[in-house]
Image (spheres, rainbow, N blue to C red):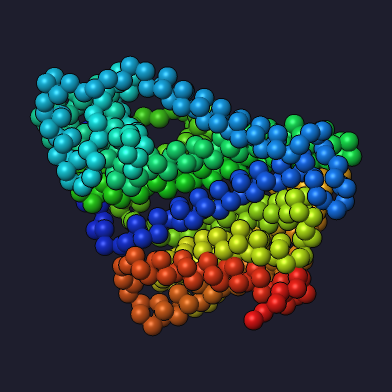
Length: 495
């Protein structure tokens, strides 16, 4: 967010924040759990494949000569080295940062302290300045870590703006600083470090798996091509998930800042939308804008004036959740098949899949669909149409996600191209469609009935949110166990 741009008139007030958008945070935490599960199962998959030490079909043969422990140590070492390189790059990027001299900027320092008090931060951040920031600012440090304190780095141009006495400069300065302080208040710095670790872990897994696949003497050129393509697409999916997570946190930082400074933030975003942009013919600029982790100022302004839009459950989120679930579904069966020789239809695979796929997917879908339907004003027929659309989207996404792994459910690489119409799931396609219908249907129907009985939604308390997530997790786990059992998979002994 920059301080430049034409001077705007007094902006309209942001919408009153009576809607509890922070109660759900756009499923950020639940989507992060699904991303962590998919990445770690992928890691177990590549290690089990490289050292198929108890697979029934491999008879103890190793893809790479040696012990399976060496693959584990190598993968973790590469991950640590990548994370260390990331930290070194951050240190180099922040070169020239020094503590803020409060005697040279007394008015700006006083205004920052006032904003820190308004935000209610328990740990006051250290103030720093960096010449390369110009008229921008950013928040850093590890939040809620006892050895490190969060900090707020401010550019010299923004400090000069904060030292001015006119009202417009004060409003823009307050908007930018309050937004960065809201990131600290929402603990987004800690989340950023987790996402960085997951991205690096995903990169290491992708490269390691690509190196391991050609060493299998039984794999064909077609299977190798399919495997590398599946790994590349999965890596791209992880990047899209990380982008959506960070974009959601930007919108919620605006919501937090608008609780204290709605007019200032609205003015700053309006000035950013009026700032001159590059030509639309510049494809590189378009790609940078689309891939940027910060939403456009126009989108942020729309969410600020209409915070109810954040309660909607976009189809992209349902696609992302389905893709991650499909990946975890197949890789869990493949990892167990390679590691302990378990069949994808056995009890152990059934319960592990229910815990790693059904439980997080059930909570993710239930929380998002509940809030959307609860705050909707659509009629019954329209709600049922949305229910059908969500079921189809989730089922197709899970099916496509099952193709984003170079191994099948039995831990063997594909020897030919697997087209999207070919089923890869360890269970039949009608069964997984039925699971998706049940996962999507029950929260949607319950929320719709509650909305018909009590049209005006109220703020959701912490106890209600926890209860919803716990019930949705239990339902998701149960569906992934009971439905396959009814269809004849596994030998589940019910009490």
